[in-house]
Length: 398
Length: 162
Image 1 (cartoon, each protein chain N blue to C red):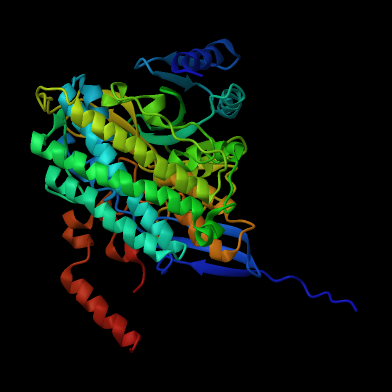
Image 2: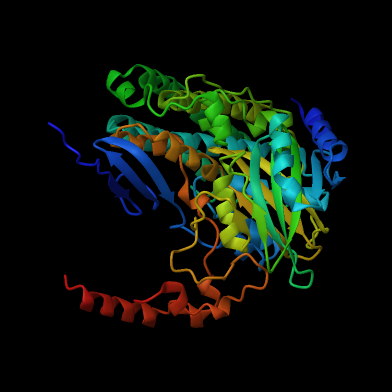
C-alpha cells in the first residue's frame, strides 16, 4: 500500500513568557514528533536602550547605568567600563583597589555559578540540588552584602579605584565562608558526576565538539567545556590577575555534563584566588583622582564575566560624555550555539540545552528602546496606562 | 599563538598583501586596519581565518555624524590579548557592507544588530530579520545613529495600535 501523505512539521512556540524560561525570550522550535528539526530565537524582550542612553550621560553616571545592565554580573560590567575609561585617561589604579576588584569579581563568579547550578538542576527536575545550591549561595550573598551593603549591584567600583575596603574581621568572615563553600562544592561535583538520574539528562546531551565551539564563536565556560582555551583572565590578564594567575579549567567532552563540571571546577579556582588575595592584600590607597573630561581616544576593554568574555568598546571625544560605548555580552555569542545544538534532540532537552550556556537575557538585550522617563509626552503616563488598562479589559472580558 | 605573534601576522597580512590598507597601533595590544575598499573586507577576513586569527569578538558600528556623512563599521578579531580591528567606512545614505556569515557563521547576530541599529544594509545575510527591536518599530528609524530624534517617535508609532 502506498501513502503519499507529506510529512508535516509542527512548530512549538516557547516564550517569551514560559515556565521553562526564567527570563523573557522567544524560541520557535520546529519538531518532527519529539525531535527538534529547527530552532529560531527572537531576542529583545528585555531591551532598555542602555547603549543609546550612555551617549547622553557623563562618565560617572554611566558607571552606575552600565552596572545595571545585569543584576547577576553587575560588578564585571562596571569593571570592564572602569578599566577602559582608566586606560583612556591614562590613570594608574592603586594595587589595593585592583586586588579588591578581582576579589569581588571572583565572589560574583561564585554567586553566579551557584545560581546557575540551581537553575540548571531545576530544569533537569532535580529540585533537591536546586534548593541546596541556592541555600549555600546565600553564604556568598551574605559576604557580598557585608562587603558592599548590597546583595546585587554592589557598586564596588568607582572610576579610579574602589569604594570599599576589607579589614581583618571581614577577611576572616570571607575565609570562613569560602571554607564552607569549598566543602559543599566538592559535594556538588560528586553529585553532578555520579547521580544516575541526573546524568541521563546531561551526559551526551547537547554535544559540541571543539571545532564547532570555535566556529560558533562560543565563549566562557561553554567554550571551555568543549576544550577551547578561551579565558580572558588567562589570555590577557587585566587588573590584578597579573599578580594572581588563574589556571584555566577545560573539559574535552563538550556535553552538558562537561559544562556542569567546568563551572563547578572553576569555583575551586575562584576559592583559591579569593584566599590568596585576602592573605596578600597589598596596602595603600583605594582610589586615585580621575579627570571629569576624558582624553579623546578609543579603547577596547575585555574581561572575563562569569558567562564568558565581556567586550567593551569605548570612544571618547574629549568631553565629559562618551561618544560611543559598545557592549558585547557573552550570552549573544553563546546563544547562537543553542539554536544549532538543539537540532536532533528531544524537545524535552531544549530547556536544558538553553540553560547549559547560562544565558543572561538582560545582558543580551541591553540596547535600544526610547527612554520614556525623560520625555513625558511620548511615554506612558499613569493616565494613559490606566486608560489602556480599562480599554483592554473592556475588549477582553474576564 | 601569543599576542605579539598575532599582531605581527595581522600586520603582515594588512601591509604586505595586495589590498589597500592603512595600519595603526593605537595601543600596544591593538592593530587597527583601515580598509580603503569595501571589496577587500571578505578576502581580508578569509586571510585572517586562514592564519587562525579568526575569533570575531564583536562588530561595532559608529556614527561619524551627519557632517562627515559616513558611518564606520569595525570588526574586532581577538587572539590572546591582541585585538585586530578592521575598519571600513560607508556613506550614511547608502550604507552597505557584505555579510561575513559565509566565512564566520557566528557573525550573524552581530550583523543583524548592526543593520537594525545603524541602518547598514548587510548583503548576503541569511536571515535579515530584526534581532532586538520590536516588530512594530518604525521603518528607517535607526536608534544608534546620532541624529535619531526620540521625539519624533510618538507613543502610537512605538507601541502600535492598542
